[in-house]
Length: 546
Image 1 (cartoon, rainbow, N blue to C red):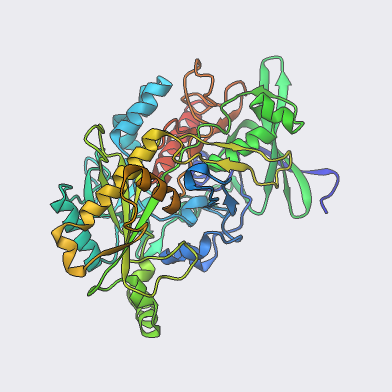
Image 2 (cartoon, helix red, strand yellow):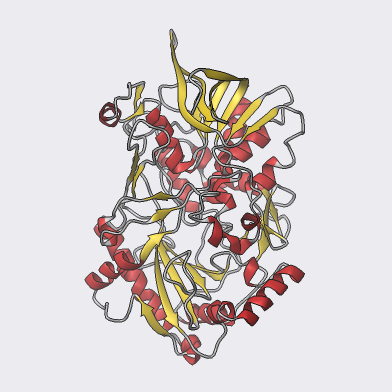
């Protein structure tokens, strides 16, 4: 039972809501000034769960209440009325503590679109590339595309697989070149992903950006296990201003006040939810839940975008896969020893090892689909691997035209919001899905893979026509956990923009959103590192304005 009166948690220059990817970066950068006080508040706990740090442990972190909000989508028409789990990190480091660790920036065209939609050239590729470089600690050292000495460690994966090498050769035979670097602005090609690890251990943003600064100047307060209920918005003669937050923690109700800014970093699901709970959002939705309208911003919670992966699986013969290794006690022992002795082998695996970027059809201006290829197969995460040797080739549409939404289900902050991605709701997305599945079959039919006698069992060879393949995509599609866009930035004239190009919430002074929700268009690849870049830029803007 919460106490009826609210306790004060103090007054700070800045309050950061969410100690995820963006929040950790902001906490690091803002506290560089010893005269600035910062409160970093997180609903989850410390990142001291062992499976966070062992790379394969993502299997035990997803859908685990210790580390995951355990959201689910609404039933999706495009997925043949299926509902999906929708993992979001609930722990220090946020999604960087439970994600696939894949280092990906997106493509040059993504950032050109951001600049065009916001009218701000500082979001163009040539302007954000130096930001990526300054944060990076790349295994190969510094060059024109990569940086060294930054906090964000990037390493090669510590294993390879014969079946994945064969898939890479098959892709080349299909016309897709090999590449060793997906992060130079044009992702076209096939190669092994680079990962955010240090010596075979997950490198999350908590380690990278928080660990070294907790006691640097004594000006950072970190509160875990504290759930923010609403923003404190005050109406002044100059307009509406965010003055802090209400939250719960330790069985008490609390308030904390900010004198400069409150920075909302709760992610593409949490940030629109908290804005709506605070009376900032679509009027009709707020009235439905008897929430007084503070600012009518119809775009709050809209424009949800995600990468839907289509998991095709193939039985193989005469080659080692994780299925067969992990299904024997001897294999499990070998896997454990290899990791204990060398921090390598399957326990050091990111969820996906081999990547491929290409175009689903010749009309695409750049690579519009991405593959995650794995030496394993299973029905879904959390279930056992299949007992036979197999590999999975997952493919996703990088630039989906489908748009979904996030909307509160009630006025209670503890109730999960309604998440409706609207996957495959456009003819364009269904065409890309059908074309992608057909391309996968062409790659698997190439000579390099034939000695392993690949046999498709997901979705199955009975699906042949474009219409059948689009239906099959609905059967096998699942989220790749990349939601963005729900508080998008845009021009002042854009009625659906929630923040301006400097991430300030329209109509509310002292409030910014800094996370993946501000992306007007999803990046072409895994969005974790682009979110770090967004936070770096936000920190520079904030510090420059002091």
